[in-house]
Structures are given as C-alpha cells and as structure tokens.
Length: 261
Ligand SMILES: [Zn+2]
Image 1 (cartoon, rainbow, N blue to C red):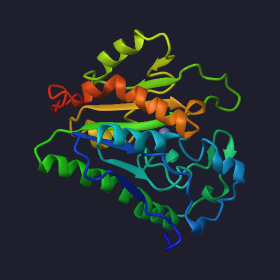
Image 2 (tube, rainbow, N blue to C red; image 1 turned 90 degrees about the vertical axis):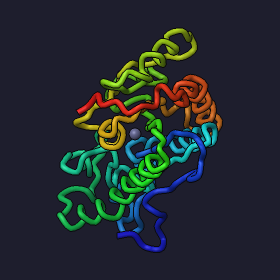
Image 3 (cartoon, rainbow, N blue to C red; image 1 turned 120 degrees about the vertical axis):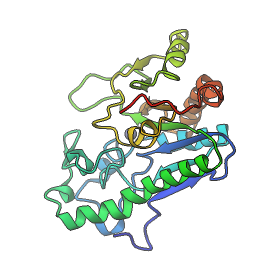
Image 4 (cartoon, rainbow, N blue to C red; image 1 turned 30 degrees about the horizontal axis):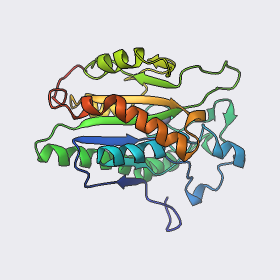
C-alpha cells in the first residue's frame, strides 16, 4: 500500500548506539499513507492525540541520544493501524477514537486490513525483533524502553493530574526503585499504573518483545501538554533519563527473568 511518496514503516535512530538498551515508540507518527488520503478526517483530528502520541518521538530521540542507544520509531499513525495492539484486537484498526469517527476504517475489508498489517505493522515489529536479536548475538541483555504520551483530557472526562505514569506489571526490577524515587520528589505528579497500566491483553509491544523474552523493561506515559514542543519533550526526556539511567545501565538489573506469561 505504500508508494514512493510515503516514508518508511519505521525509522531507526542511532542504530549503532553503544548502550545496552533499546528504545521503541509505537505512536511516534501521525503520517497517513498517501493512498488513504485524509481517511475522512478533518485536519484538526489528524493533528490531535487520536492520531499519535504528541511529543513521544522527540522524547524517544532525546533518550536515544542521552543513552547513546538505538531507537525504533513507528512510521505511521495509530489511526491507520495501532502497533501496540494484537492482530485480533478490534482496537487494532479503530472505527472511533475518543468519540471521533474514522470513516475509512468503517467496515474495512480483509484485503485492506492485511495490507496495513503487512506494509506497516509487521515491518515495525520485525525491526524491533531484529534489534533485540542483534543484542542477543552480542551476548547482551538489553533494557527495553517503551515511550508513550497521553492526552491531558479525554472528551467528556476530567483533566488528568498525572504528569508522568509508570506502566508496569509483574516485573518490579525497575518499578520499585523508580516509584520510590518519584515518591521523594514533590515536583512531579506521577501515576502508578494510573490512568494506564501495562495490560498484556491490550498492550502488545512490551509483552510481545520484552516480557516474553524476560527482558527488563520500562513503559511510561508523559502528559502531552507538557511535551508538545521540543523544549518540553527534551526537559521530560532528561528528567526520565536522570531518574532511570543508573538502573537501566546496571548490570544486575539486566538479566533474563521470566515473570510472564
Ligand atoms: Zn501511545
């Protein structure tokens, strides 16, 4: 489905970074393949949080630079296909997102669905697998970092107070010390799995790539109004880096440990 006018289905930043760490960003892009036009959406809708995680790509790029680690960024909008959903999840290709109808996705045929999976979803996830296999081939257990951002306000809901949310499940290697550090700070309003946790039945990327391999991992969300420009994104990326860098790089945390499934 992609044409020469379209970007690649993923981008690898700092491919030869030296850190034992892989950064991924499922919702980095709001690009829609040229073949799908505007998907029946207004420009306003195509710019907002339903299309992408505002600021997340800049956070991921900054973390890749700070760690000197590779990062894999998805190349297309979650409205085309959500790279953080299982293939059998109805939310893989949404008909409605935060009350906005997505006309092109209504009643999508099997052929169009398969084309999006083959052209966009698979290449992104294969790139992540390739990067992890490269670490394994070097005998390195990488730390897996998944970057997300969340809207300040879903339609019809109260604004969210959380500026930063740690999304975690059984593996507390990073979660416990990070939550303790966050609790010591009075300048960050943080959520412990609030408003989002790490849900193996919804989230795909961390369970599939990191948890199944037993890799230590970090999934987090930063609120989008704080990171909508480069300055804010870099400030929050630096803050996250300062909070976790010694843990991510500590050899004793980078072990294979099967907490799930
Ligand atoms: Zn996201």
